[in-house]
Length: 518
Ligand SMILES: *Cc1c(COP(=O)(O)O)cnc(C)c1O
Image 1 (tube, helix red, strand yellow):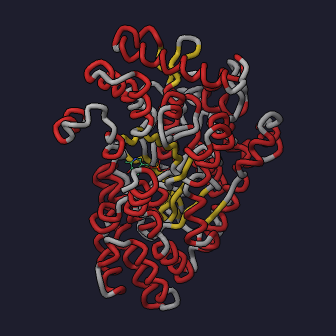
Image 2: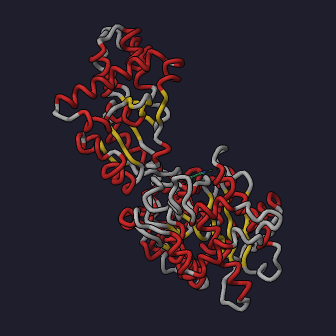
């Protein structure tokens, strides 16, 4: 960028116009090292004064935060920095001194300055570096941006509120509908009489005039059925498991993490399995639970959750007493190309993260665009999905952020375990041996994480047991309501017709107008 700039603006030796022609949008904390690197290039290679280089840099960078999980906000150790990029470390030290000086001038005490320091205890706090040195700081959904302002970056927000803004994420409709769901795409074009919606997704709103047209609703159901047949065939070939396209396809596909609560889904399946075994004549619409996702290599508990899903699948799918009622599939190697087959075939989109923890989510939007109903918490972009499609056309459950913040210190998951039989039944199954008869303690770590605090870690940090009962009740509601196929199709169409807001075209245009000033 600097080399090209010098070619085009040979007379601007002071780089006066650099930030007018460049914006560097920092996509998370990973590329923040580019900040001292630009200063280095300007100062060391182009003889710009340090303070002047800082000004240019501040007007060039913008920072997008993607998570509020403390462990994901990077800190880089001083000793490694000194070895790998000593000059950048020197520049960061200078920037840190500037921050400290400026805040002292404002009258802040040493202690009050601590949260703002870029370097503390020989660690470089990359997010602090990005916030001081950027002209814009944004979150990726309304709730997430609010949490950044109120909590994660509240110290910064109080000093520089004008920097903070929201850009709700989006997805590209060309991949996630036109390419991956040809049946639905062609159907929409036929109904709207034009393919314009592919380039202005808000035009999907035009589908609302068919909300009470039975023929249209039946066609919606038929398309979903055909997509489910395709997926069933693909799953038989790839996973060796036979599933029924007439059953409810309830899908949770995303990276494995405790905050995303795949284990809430799994202990619910265990409890449901026991219920069906004990009560074979129970009124129940057959359901196929599909899960998929990768664990980070060093995340032991996430790998145990994958193992648990596979063990539940093995036991349930081989039990002839429940086999025509529930099936469980954990798909191998979940990735974009597998997603392209899963999203179009979903009836239910599981978006069950602990409220306040999922910054935005984008899988939730892919499901919505393909006509799945969201079973979700009040979290991330789920909230905006409920707002756009109507909460009455989806399934909201669970505690909200404010409630979780209030009970944070007093929460005792054991109370839920001891007072709710369904919870005890499902949690005990983790150790009973029924899921792995030759190693009853295989799931001891998951069990302990839910009810036995240890090693300084609190039990059930992600409020799985707190939300269980509401989750189960909401599943029961879904199971009843699915049988009314036309009402279900109407809800599905409502979701599709209101997915326009979640096009990445809209997101990118907002970045272009508000931050890049294009
Ligand atoms: C969309 C997508 C994600 C993100 O899913 P979330 O449910 O938003 O976490 C992850 N992996 C793949 C392969 C995806 O396509």
